[in-house]
Length: 224
Image 1 (cartoon, helix red, strand yellow):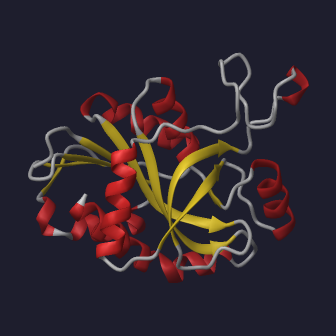
Image 2 (cartoon, helix red, strand yellow; image 1 turned 60 degrees about the vertical axis):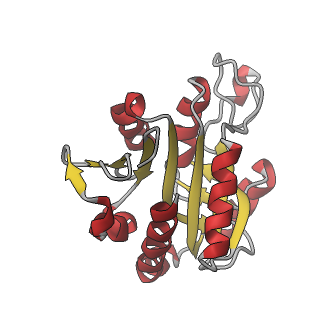
Image 3 (cartoon, rainbow, N blue to C red; image 1 turned 90 degrees about the horizontal axis):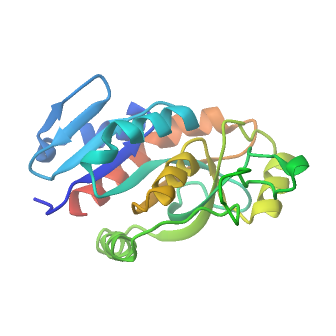
């Protein structure tokens, strides 16, 4: 059992399927979306899609855990290969735009943010995940995730976002969780699996690849 609780956030049940099905956790269902594993000392919140749902889910378990990890699927913004696994410690809220107030894209005005990049990882956890993936023969990459409620659905939009923020992946939840964790100085990182490219084929590709992603997430979490 972990000495301190770990908070895990996953957006949808398809991504969490293997974790929820594994008997090793002995999950107790605390509410419609919150689960607790006493043997592993893990709180899991299956939050739903989008920044608001992710931030709300974090708030529900925020005082119960010492650090947080998000597992989930992502779109690749450039030449990232479908099926690639990424460990992410940098995040940008790509649909935050208040440039008329004199701040850079991605920066929330009047928040004290000096950069669009949000980062609050625990290096020990990053190292553990890296070693686990080596043991499990899972090829692991690192990259910056761009998050927002705007769905990136075209190559042109993906290229412009990637060029502006230096990102490799996109999702709809990670930056919101990272933003709160950074503000309150709690460690956060994300493990993302690229199921599609940010284009019109994304929904079909996601359905085909999410089962593999769920298996990878479980293999990592079991040993973390």
